[in-house]
Length: 156
Image (cartoon, rainbow, N blue to C red; front, side, top):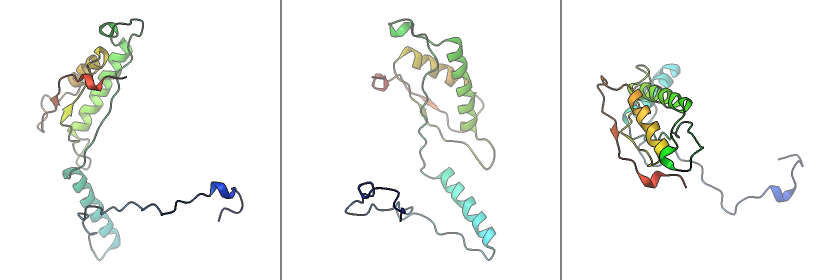
């Protein structure tokens, strides 16, 4: 199998084989679309699967770390973003806004429901800038909730 490249001790196998991932684990996987033309069948199946991902129960968790900050102070309230950190947050907010609004008809909106943030000054400042730059004022989709800072999200 491995042409003698590995010692036998490196070819360890579990007593019970690991199960492979079962894509229809919940019994809700739709059957492939049947069509006379195989290419058309594949296209329709892919289109249906995109629609399921768009309308289904997929959850996106987007983790964003704070921007660059001033590390010269020990007190958290003085450890604020640098100009580069504010620019990083603004660019992140613009990109997140694009994702929420949707790129085009095929890749529609990403349903972001809430923005959560830790209680650290640099994280709150980053979240404020991101939220302000998402530009969702005239967005006709669901509004994105801004949760209160949560000290349980602090690092450490």
